[in-house]
Length: 150
Image 1 (tube, rainbow, N blue to C red):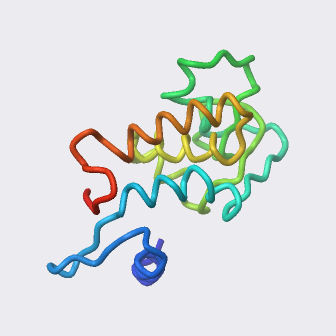
Image 2 (cartoon, helix red, strand yellow):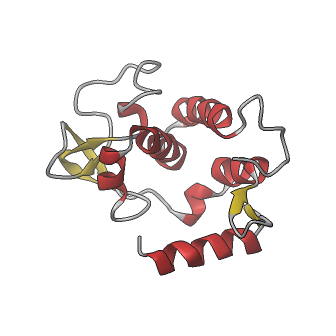
């Protein structure tokens, strides 16, 4: 994303209560509100579009933390179509066109994007497991529910 796109997205997040401005000029997520949006709104804002089977980067239940909790037939787990992909499966539209490359460069981001994809496109069990994992990711024990922290 360009710096102007990033700036605009932070401003939108502040307007809708997903983030707050800090005195230092930065921003912080409101984790409890962000979790609510992720669990109940993301699939409507960024609907998952499933496409034909291709080579790509595993996502959703095809990558940790869900891949160890669910059994999938080879080729069943979704992927983001990408030439550097290590798996083959039905393609899933990423949240943003550069998300697959960013996920390759950042394993923690890949984990979060995969959980989001399970919430966007998964069946009931996959969504339930992803919701539990996302809560662990976004509301760590030391964050204090309802407070802006990062």
